[in-house]
Length: 383
Ligand SMILES: *Cc1c(COP(=O)(O)O)cnc(C)c1O
Image 1 (cartoon, rainbow, N blue to C red):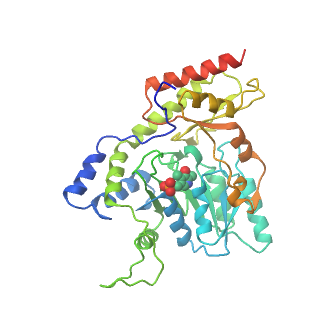
Image 2: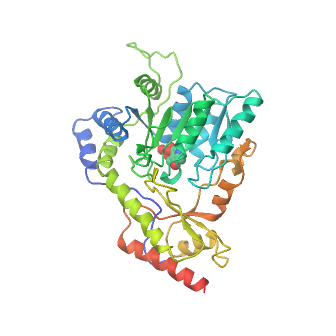
Image 3: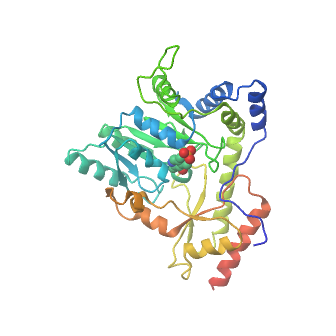
């Protein structure tokens, strides 16, 4: 292990983040709220378009929690959630005492399978438990099948929550991810496409919804000179310091998406002559992915028995970070008693897939190391 570690996705500052943070210090606007929060929200609103309203929060998880509260999810309710995702998509359902119902992926976008979704809805309605919300996720920056999923949600009159934590800057039919749900969320955690060191946002269709989310995120204070509360509140607002980092990051978002997409192209080129390795790519021109993480699927029947785990270990030896795809929620010990609808698409992806170093800050030297490691490994094993 001579070379320094090559990360999957690490923070990549653009340059003016410190200027905004310095301004916050200079004006002593270090405490919550302030011009950076407003500025960052405006940046996101104009970026997303479609007249959405954005409330900046402390995390994507907090945004999902508030989204479910806005939809009135209560103890005993059922909420449908894509199974293949990060646990943060599902945890807020449980925070509210509701029950997640997990749904399989389809093989094209790796996201919620419309057929399995409809099965789940019909089954629950037949049992007298109509789901109260659907949480769809755009994994690794790839939009879910927006037309199909929104049509089903509308047909059954169930609100759609769009988990766009990994998909800022991705589009479907030219429209930005983060604008498709009745409520949508974004994340600015350290490993995401842009970061505020830690943070998230809720995107809403109406100003009332945004104001309600912001109200709940600042301890639900009623209008009164003293502290008065008629509702349970949360401490979920983004700070003016974090928002300053976000404003700087917005200036380089599109450039960084270009660099992430170039990493995807790098892998397409690297694997074009290696049989049994498929790079996760847009199914057709309706989709434009930010390629937050570049992913591959390994078919061991075509690689002379090389498995994803063997590749992961080989890369680890060279100090290259690489990770299996998200382990589906219905296979997680904590959710083992939850209902699941679908087949084994998500499970197969988990068993065969890997996320590879994808950051916008990877150097030509990093790419050389990755290229040599793969070519060497496959030359040794395949002949
Ligand atoms: C990162 C992530 C979240 C949570 O965002 P945080 O800001 O880390 O709380 C939710 N859903 C998905 C799919 C994510 O990748």
